[in-house]
Image: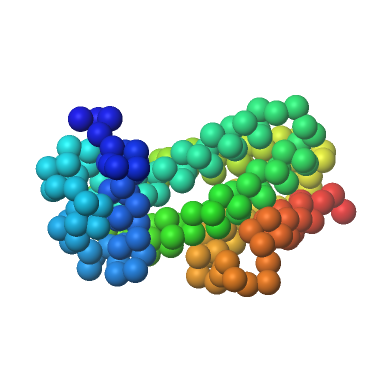
Length: 198
């Protein structure tokens, strides 16, 4: 059953996630029923519960799938051979682009995170913490090597950047004047200017 697909080959879990994402974005998590999700995905409730234990699990996966991609990309950048300033800039830009590319997911999550069960909430916080700690370690590497200023603690630098990232869903519009990459470049450059040694 795990390989079950629809007529165009889309696996059932992806169909369910796509339907849930669309409905959560349009109607809100709390106003979307399991029945509406399975009807939109064209599957049965049994299929949903085979792949996801609950609507709560769907909400968690909406965010977790983006965070997994971002973590993999951050790890690859952080482990690279580029100078630390370039790695920080690349990582800072990447999280902006991947967030904009998944804007519905980010918007749903920050709007609905409080609906998660305590266990899932704790799990998500741990996953986000791991990402932030890896990002902070890059900042600290630059500070310890003298490339970045130590005037501002690395924790605050990380919070500063991710505060901007977490608010993208409230103002960024695809039809606006800036492309995702342009927004990413501006925010990454702002971060590097904040870290510059006087």
